[in-house]
Image (cartoon, rainbow, N blue to C red):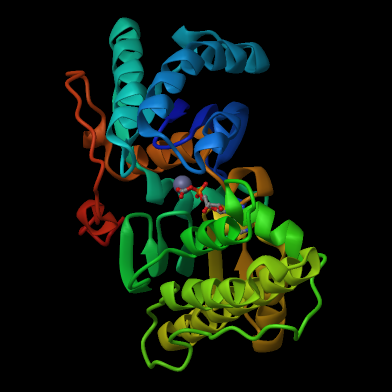
Length: 353
Ligand code: KG4
Ligand code: ZN
């Protein structure tokens, strides 16, 4: 089954062609082509994503990217078996662009469409790697909008173990970046600046580290950064900024790491799967690997270029959904989008799958 995946939920237009063909080695198939346009340069002067501009840009990018993946794969549109698009959560206008192109294209080709949950795309993206994890696993989902620990027993069988009570981890990186006068998106910028930081110069709180649950809170950490930046005022040096970036990253990563370990222990699971944009963070990966080694656990990541939003994860999640729930394939081409959409709403209750 060849699946076209279309991602347009925020500031990245991502398209991909995935050949879904599970084999006896636990691999799921082959990524035939993928293309991405990031709108970062367009939004940078506003310090964040401008929804209206994002939608307009998706309209302009989708067709050229579709042509690009056809060229890359040598496939024509008629060879596509099904079209998967991000139905939510995300920016309504941006989602509608992907949904309308997906449905119009599917209608013209007389092929089925399936609306995919963006977070399910992230959650399953590590399965696209050459040595994919097997179920069950604990997933740490760390993106710009979400920070969640989830117990994943099987495809579509998700139990929320804990989540952020305020800011998401990516959001905390982005807000810290703003305080340090770094450009949007803040995550990679903070990580880069932290490379020049000296450890131990600033000490930031590890919010909720010792709470008995698996929830997170990052707004206090951001406030601690704000307080230090204000204290230094105009006297802040480049070295101070690097030291703050480092201390912030250490605190955020420390909490993510320790809570992930606790989730593995509580659920008596050996595998941790990390997904979402913050999963690209090198320090987080180093610390999680260290934690895993020490505690005889395994950690799986998506390939680096599949950590942030992309079409491949949508094509793949669409394929996995259809394999589990073939009735999800739609031929009526009437679509809607779900800017707010809880993962719990797409729980597959039939555990036999
Ligand atoms: O998953 P994603 O691409 O989009 C959402 O669905 O939110 O995640 C984007 C988030 C942004 O907050 C970005 O700053 C953060 O991931 N991010 C990083 C890194 N790369 C991206 N945060 C920390 N370190 C990174 N290397
Ligand atoms: Zn995302």
